[in-house]
Amino acid sequence: MKSIVITGSSSGLGKGAAKYFAERGWRVAATMRTPEKETELTEIENISVYQLDVSDTESINTAAEQIINDFGKIDALVNNAGYGSYGILEATPEENMRRQFDVNVIGMLMVTKAFLPNMRENGDGIIVNISSVGGKITFPLGTLYHGSKFAVEGMSEALSYELSAVGITVKIVEPGGIKSNFGTTSFDMTVDGSPEEYKPLVDKFVAGVKASEGGGADPSVIAKVVYDAVTDGTDQLRYTAGPGAQRTIATREKLSDTEYITFMKQQTGI
Image (cartoon, rainbow, N blue to C red; front, side):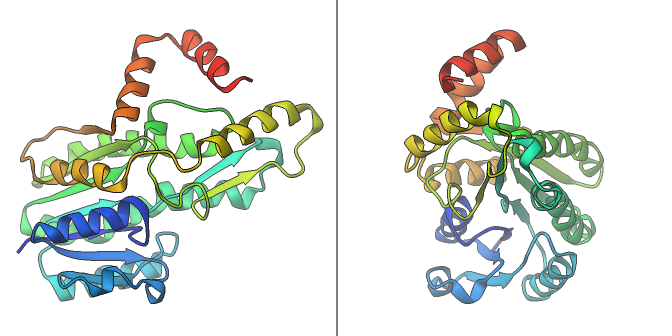
């Protein structure tokens, strides 16, 4: 039985992927910040739940040691944990900036680093980093979030060179919107204290976010793409997940920078 580690498994894609892999005979180490609150995954026979906070190096290393001790060989790692920080840069505290990159970038690197020795010593492994359509395109007020996801794209591609030399494959999955708690507990909007000049932009963006609540693909649709990335036996680097993401990225690729920015301003009404 093959084994996989999935971070951010308390909801959304992480939980969906944990169930998807378990249903197909994989042993799953589902990690999350507060495993004591989890009730669904703990009832599934071949899923084990572990405490792991990607912004806490000690937590990462402790979880990795426990998982490797319990599972032995780790065949795949899905770096899914993340969140979005949106808002006006002038009004954004430094701690929000650092948290965005600590979770989405540094946390991903540290989790990967913790499991690399096991994969390297075994001579194989698949690492899937969950990026976003937001790693290829941008929306207004997304300076921090898009910066972090563009970083995920770059570091994953660069990492693929060195890890291919030791038998490990790196892949990137780029979902669009997912039905999850991303718009609530996994989404920070910093607009309080914004200079008055930004108010028209903020009001339009906030209205757009509220209008889009409840949309997005079902996590199982994206989980299938993650499963395919892990099991297809290819060295394909990028997987665009969901029809919405495919349409958005295709549109971006057809437009120049100026055309895209004009298009996005029209779409968001700013």
